[in-house]
Amino acid sequence: MSGLLYPHQREALSRQIEADIEELTAHKYNDGHRNHLGASLIGDACDRRLWYHWRWVMFPRFSGRMQRLFNRGHKEEARFIEWLRDIGFSIWEGTDDGKQFRVSMVEGHFGGSLDGIGIAPAIEKYALLYQIGPFLTEYKTHNDKSFDKLKKDGVIKSKPRHYAQMCTYGRKYGYRYAIYCAVNKNDDELRIEIVELNWDIGTELERKAEQVITAQTPPKRLSEYPTHIECKFCDFKDICHKGAPYEVNCRSCEFATPVQGGQWHCGHYRAIIPADVIRAGCGQWHPIGRAK
Image (tube, rainbow, N blue to C red):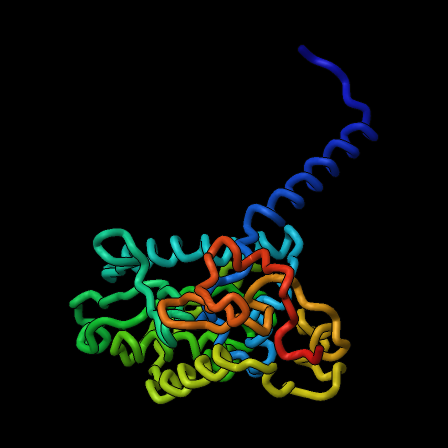
């Protein structure tokens, strides 16, 4: 079977395929709300923004393009692992039974998954690195601007959230160093940085996570001005500065309290909230931290 497609038909069909992929990826790579407060977020400068994430007051909606960018970051992990192994490093992505290396703190409500653990090859050029024993591996993608700043200032200064994440994991696993593997997704330039981790920072971040998790009212704003650079581009700016309504679910309700084992307790019904109920809320819902 064959036929002719006129130029305007080819153009229309091409745009339709683009639109369908855009819609597909916007939903396919959307994992929804996280059950725990992630170690990848805990280095954020704004405690209120963390609290909004944690309490599910709103789920930021990302376009298909943004979701594809996030997904590309996940796919880069496999490439870095391949390259490190090919030059002689031993890299473990998880435990022998196939589970990810994880950390869990604050009664199961704070934590995250390690990208990996590695050991350098026992050869002369890597002798110093081999002698320190196991270290964390962290894999990240950057755009041009972010990558240039990383090369200029290093990961601690240019990406404090990434450093906070590594310090949190390092403290729990007892590792003093991490290998931070970065790639510029615009031109595939690589940047490797061996980072010394600060366990005191890890301890402080766990304390910070506990304060955010247990708070029954929103923490102080980073700035009282919505035009502040951090506020201007924040997903929660309308909720924080303009009083926009919350998303309705149990986590955003004043009756919900996080309890042991990563569970939630309802003060109205005086019972543990079933996992399949948390996302829906109920008729007794009232937004936490807001006047009646």
